Length: 432
Ligand SMILES: [Fe+2]
Image (cartoon, rainbow, N blue to C red; front, side, top):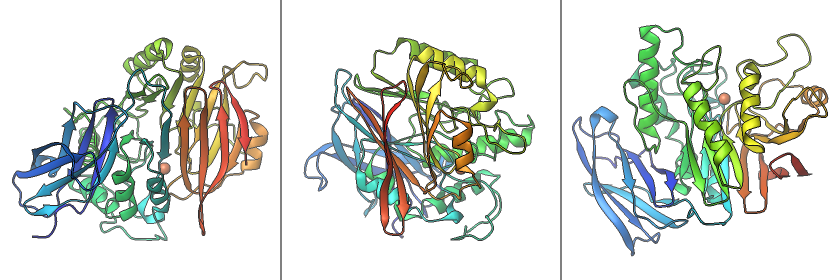
């Protein structure tokens, strides 16, 4: 039998004392398969810290989610899996900082990796940085039929609808070595946007049994292919959560799809959870990690001038979040270009007090839309910077500073196209 670890390895959901280790077997018989795992202090596995076995079940596509606990905070580990005599690749992971720590956190942000639109070179450069944690803010897959003029082809070009379709789509994406390298380089904390299920869907969609079946299949496949701490139940998956790094950074991951309807982006329970943490956290940096453009963005020209699928569709909810935070950093994506924005209590009032800073991450591979960036910058004084390269964000949060770089891909490699420093109320420095 061929080596079953073709989809690679991953880790995620770092806590000060634990992480999730993930893999998924391919080409194995349709019954439970025993998988051994090892976690070591060194890359050559001479100092084993913990080991055990897990069962890969066909009902979960032979995925494995090992919950490792009792680890040391802020510590690097290495892990691998074994099935029979076959070994997986080796992954590197790192636990979150001790709750009392003031250590710097090094993070990266990526999103929007449509397979047919391009290669995952951005993820290879991200992997080379070996950050403490990687945030993925959505469009991990695209459910859509294969795009016109593909740079590379899907094996199954139709839209994903069934569980088998979604599983096959993830397997195709994970056939990319740069995506596997990015997972093997650091623990990931991911949230989803729309394309993990269906373009621009909200909540329960049209409410039909067919849509709810499709959503449940998509949520299950998402779980099966990512190192998540919780599994879906009855067609729902708990995604909003926080990952805290010492006294330095409180990263709050939002779910902007599952509970959404015309009246709300987050739903009452998620908003209450968020506002409660924003008003009580003792941590220096309050960081929203979520898919959608958060600042107001007026696009001159023919209507509609505001994009209602983003936070401009829910301005009152946005204002409540900003008011509760009293200083916020937002890491977002979705629009396939880099942007950097000041956040305002009232975006239409030039004298409105500063309320935070947003860094919008460009796409790994998805094609950018037609954007008249000059006109958008002119019409929105709080939007400070635009860059059209594909890439990712690289940043650090420390006891006294928060810094974010726009990383842009060029033929010769990757480059820092702009660097920003924020005090949590506004962007205080831009280096281009
Ligand atoms: Fe996208």
